[in-house]
Amino acid sequence: MRMVVAAVGRLRQGPEAQLIADYLDRFAKTGRPLGLPAITLTEVEDKRGGGMAAEAPLLARAIPDGAAVVVLDERGQMLTSPELASRIASWRDQARDIAFVIGGADGIAPELRDRADLAISFGRMVWPHMLARVMLSEQLYRAATILSGSPYHRE
Image (cartoon, rainbow, N blue to C red; front, side, top):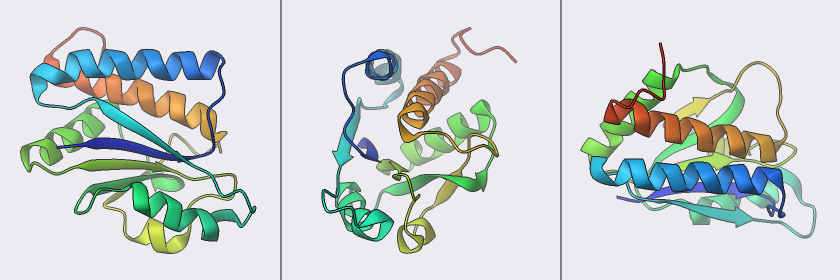
C-alpha cells in the first residue's frame, strides 16, 4: 500500500512547510503499527501557466494505478475526522493505494475530479493550496490517531 499527496505548486521553506513535515512525520510514526505507510508528497508544476487543464495530466501521473483517489474540492463532502479515518482504514483493509489530490489556483480539472472515489471539502470557504496541504496533513495524522485509539482526537 502507498499513500500519496499530489499537489500543484512547489512548497517553499517556511511555517507551512514545517507544519506539513511535522504532521507527516507524526503520521508515519503513528500509522506504521496500523499498516499505514509513510506519505509521499509529490509536487507538480505547469511552468507554462496552462491552468487546471495542463495540471491534470501532471497530477494524474502522480496517482498510483488502482489507487483510491480523494480530491480536495470546495464542492466535496464535509466529512468528520472519524469518517475520514474510517475511509482510510477501509482502503487500507482492501490493500488499496490512496492518493489525495490538491489542485492549483483554478481547482482540479473536471476529468480528474470525475474519476475521484471521494471529493472532500474543508468547508465552504476556499483555502490557498498551501494551507490546504497543512490542513490535509493534520487530518491524516488525526485519522491515524483515531485509528490507534490515541487521545489526540476528542469527540
